Length: 344
Image (cartoon, rainbow, N blue to C red; front, side):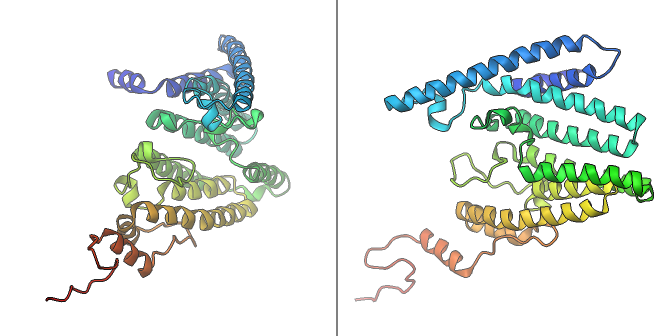
């Protein structure tokens, strides 16, 4: 018990607050616990305060832009974000809603469909754990997109990943219920169990990657190297070059195997593969630029292990360029010229 208290005490305020509201949302759906609805009322008050704060920040930003104010203390002038307290205001609504979703999935599992109910619980746990893992291990990376107010509460939870993500999700729900009604024989329990195991493995791999990389992990591809950037090659990164992507591929595909959706299983696998065929080479090009020979050697040691996805291929020309950059500058000799000066 002491270890549990220590772990929670070490959590960042955002992670602890998110976990509390997630539990409150789950409890709010249980008939025996009505007090959590009082927390829901408080939650609405926090949301109202947040919206007012966003509007004030946007107004201040507009005034500062008009006055050409370059005050470095106003964070919103630099990157359109609110001060550091913002994530703590954004955390309750999304966490509470996902907690309610978890309880709703449980209700579906015991009343309508065990298969879909467990899937819905897995979905809610995944999105909440995305936020919680970043908040716990890399709180400095928490950020929210204030350019689209309806989505601002969803950013750190990957709930506003893309329109394509939600189209895919709704398509999978539609396929499941239509097949359950017209072709119930497609929904085979042991196949669903295999999907659940793949989902568990994929999400565990992804969260292990986020935990191992800590502050070096980001949901966005870095285009500029900063002093704190380090190449992580230990832990799950010694098994796969992009373990978070590897985990996501198997998690997303596994959810459809879990639902026994033949059409969406193929669709999700193809869509995820095409996405990573584009993203991985782009990211590896930046990593080679950041870490040069260090990442080149890492590429040769460790594979990606996502079907039909290969990384950015390092060329001999790049290696020669890095070698020339490391050569000491000698007066009278061009960079890359290895000939010794003639003796007199």
